[in-house]
Amino acid sequence: MLNDSFMTALTPSPFAKGETEIFIEPSMANRHGLITGSTGTGKTVTLRVLIEQFSSMGVPVFLPDIKGDLSGLCRPGGGNKKIEERARLLGLNELSYEGFPVRFWDLHGKEGHPVRATISEMGPLLLSRILNLNNTQSGILSMLFRYADDSRLLLIDIADLVSLITHALENTAEIKGKYGNMTSASLGAIQRAVLTLEEQGGDLFFGEPSLVLEDILEVKDGKGTINLLSAAALMKTPKIYSTFLLWLLSELYDLLPEAGDLEKPRFLLFFEESHLLFTDTPKVLEEKIIQIVRLIRSKGVGVYFITQNPGDIPEAVLGQLGNRVQHALRATTPGEMRAVKAAAKSFRQNPKIDTEKVIGELGIGEALVSVLDRSGVPAPVDRAFIYPPRSSLPPLSSTEIQAEVRSSPIFGRYEEAINRHSAAEELLQRQKEVMAREQAAEKSSVKPKPAPSSAGRSSKTKDAGDVVSTIAIRTATNVGTQIGKEIVRGMLGSWLKKK
Ligand SMILES: Nc1ncnc2c1ncn2[C@@H]1O[C@H](COP(=O)(O)OP(=O)(O)O)[C@@H](O)[C@H]1O
Ligand SMILES: [Mg+2]
Image (cartoon, rainbow, N blue to C red; front, top):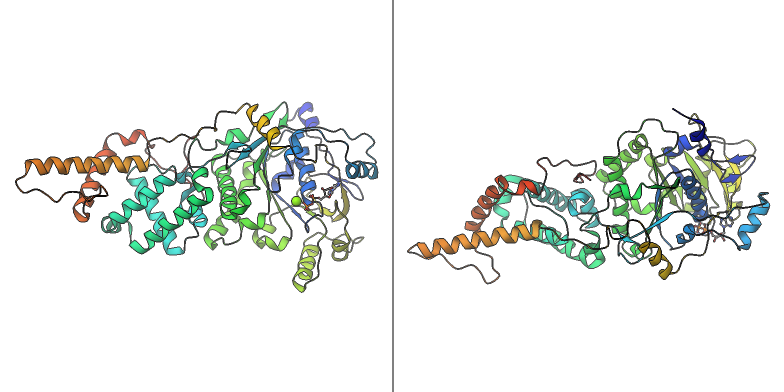
């Protein structure tokens, strides 16, 4: 159902000029992409130009701002010699400078709306990756999640996870009976990993209110929102950074409806430093990532990987990346030379271009480009100049970013963390109830029971039974109001809360 105005809105502008002008076919933008090249060759500028064009087309995007050099996207550019030079080179007499709607996000909440997820939404698989757990420990964590689900314990923040593990340590025998083998040593190791994560800032990331996808999918005055995740500080904890991105990918996959063939994508993700998504990633998780990348297309979502060397990305993912921009690759070591050969071979060849030779010769902001045509066939590779961006290259100051955040229509939605009644509070309450009942029993019985330990926790075996019966009672009564009856888990094991 295309009408004329819809078609005009979709007229894509070129992002590069080779033999002809090159643009990403909007209906093929969900066939993913790859931007590669050594440092300083123009990857981030290319990505900026693409983002500007998709935003203009009404496609919202999400991307981490690794070096803090993208905040200028919200201001019109101008006054930059290199940009003017490039505009002249490409015969753009009047480059129309323009700012775009940017929404700032920050896990630390300093230069953006805080972005959070709950432990439960993250799920055991991704959490194991953040925590660097081995297979055994990861299996135990999955068991703990099942135990929490069955016991109607909400896992929201790190405190909930710590309480759950402590509870498991005190009731290992009982939980083991139902859920499978777990040792105190492994539980202890998981607990230490959780505490390390907390020190790294995990306590900021896990909690509520958690990110609502609608807030990154907005289109304002016909322009797609550019969601920028402040990532400079985050890069110090690459595991948290990359796992958050995987979580976002899986949320989009799990929660967006099937879209069929769209005239333009519904949403695009750009992952800079995307090799981090695949380092230290267990096979099971990597296979799932590959599967999500393959399937998320049908939800109208395109994923663009940005990294230095295509070899940083697994074959099975590379094979799915239809739109490619290869900037210069410097090759001195044998490994790097092999990388250049592989990158050159990955293109549909053009008899006029010796790809392998050209990769080493490309100037800054120049690239080998191949995009999918309307029918999804890769065009022969072309040597092209990337267009100049229309937004401002210099970044905003911290004060300016904070002003942007305060004037955002969603300001206030995420700013204050909320701490509702969840596993930590619930387990404490259950324990108090057990103790109260013990004390009551003590008073009425002739032979008093031993008093609870000084830590407020009573001696092992007996309590286990008591705690379980308390859980059973609560499950049957009021906890149903806290968690929906059915717990649905998505592709990566995330708990799909209704949003
Ligand atoms: N298409 C372009 N037009 C004009 N200048 C560019 C272009 N691409 C890159 N440059 C210049 O090169 C610099 C480095 O590019 P950048 O994209 O940051 O490299 P990378 O991300 O690969 O490290 C930019 O700051 C800019 O001055
Ligand atoms: Mg860069």
